[in-house]
Amino acid sequence: MDVLKALKLVKADAEIVLFNKFDPDHYQGVVLPGGFSFGDYLRAGSIAANSEAIKGVKEMANEGKLVLGICNGFQILVEAGILKGALLPNLNLRFVTKWVWLRVKRKDTPFTKESKDVLFMPIAHAEGRYFLDDEESASEIAVLQYADERGVPTSEANPNGSIMNIAGITNEGENVLGLMPHPERASFPSISPNGSSDGLQILKVFGG
Image (cartoon, rainbow, N blue to C red):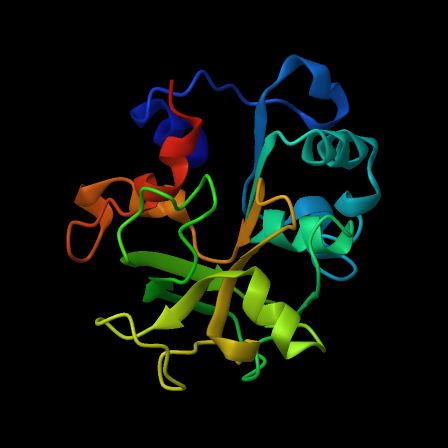
């Protein structure tokens, strides 16, 4: 519901669709929200990644339609092979929930081309440590990095141990974005510690 309300703020023609009623041909874009799909009974996102609905999401991604995966949605996209790498347990082996600063590393994706250079959004995850065994490839696909308030990636700013401070990545076609921070929770200034609505910088790509 938070994602839907945020999408309405950017005037997106959006609706909630249950996984067993999803027809990819009816939509020009899709957002996989955060949460705990199928209770995260195995690795986070692994059961959902094998559902019929995600086959449809993969079709949309291959057709160049916009696909956004937030937190658990990011985990699903990785588990489904739509995005590279893996999301491992946080280094401290604890659930982490806090607001973080993010450097927008790439501004050549539809989601970030009109974005500010530094964003402020919250995270809430236990398995958000991004890993890819090829650092050069990881650098190429990294879109968002955990950073300090000035937008400088530092070890102190890394909340989960992600390689290269990576908080979000894209695919080769640049039409898919997976990120651990929650843009929908940073869309309403009244609930942000500093009045941030930076999440709309990401979501406005779906606007009408």
